[in-house]
Picture 1 (cartoon, one colour):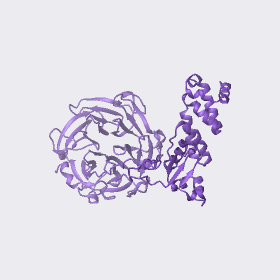
Picture 2 (cartoon, one colour):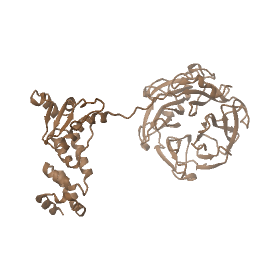
Picture 3 (tube, helix red, strand yellow):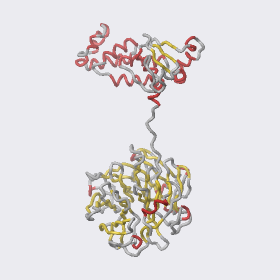
Picture 4 (cartoon, rainbow, N blue to C red):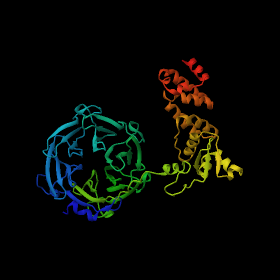
Length: 523
């Protein structure tokens, strides 16, 4: 048997036909230390890679009430027993420290990989549906486990997802419900129908779920938004884009740098879901069950179940041969990742147009590309792009496209303060609101005048969020000058409620007599 590490030369690009090789199983013994991997009977379809040693795999094995966790060195082809678990093992996962977590249908055990020492971690032999700590929690039908980006153990339990804190052993249900169904939604509002596999993708920070009886692959974002990533719900085999594709009882999942591999159990194939949502078949042929190591659709597979992947892209899956013996098979997926795009500079680039007079744009060593100067009431210039103002504002479109003097000139005048004019032009170019306190109320009036409802709402929200003892009188005075009745009233109420703090600031002394009298009436 060629070791799995030697297959790198035959690695397939993610999503393309894969070369399948048998790496363990086909034997008739349950395995003892020193056995070769092919001589061991793999009696359960679950496995997980060691996090430190890239080609060490743990798998569940055994019979006659002897449920073992076995260690397979895939480079050397050697098997070693780690421990025996008192219950039938349904799922395995390994944390970043190398500790093994073995789950039965209702209970999870924690196992040391060095000496095989084990202890009960969560749940008990009693089935149920209870969120609690440690052995007080109850699980009903654990099918898969995996660790997320925060090293919490994610447990696929029937139609819902639970997570377990390693530190506190607290079990919490966070997605789905006992009731089955197919509903995209947030957290426990979502519905699944038999979660058979779960995988965390470090590339996008999302969980992926094999929703087996819905024949779909679901995605859960970090804020627990559940969506259908692929599958149309029909029980069949069909490659395609996202929900135009079909699965037939998807079972195991493994995420490889943004690509999600799926063991499509009843179609006897291994499928791949790309970062863009394209579903392709990488191994096996639908309707042609069998046992044959080969490439792509020339390979033959019977009922593939669980999947595991290491950081080098070695994908291992469990399946059967025609004699009913369990085997582990593998292929290498070459990880071609698209680097994430850099941060957009659009806002900064557009904001750079709003320059002070005489400022040089370092990219052009000149005054930049602005073609219009907007003068405030005191003559302060702000640079702008004529086309942007016309596209963003009906007021400016009418002014600059009228054929009148303003439309032919490269300078226009606005009878407003320099701070408010600059804030207006910056908003029109970038959709960003930046304005000093004293200009915000005036900007609110300009938004009304120029029919800019979004700016008006943004400015109003900003004003109310900024009112503090040190600027409340500034806002009150500006509101009075701009005839902004609602803001004037809000400022008066705020000052009355915080009078002792407000009166300590010099802006209080600048209030005119009529506003002071109005304020005294509110106190």
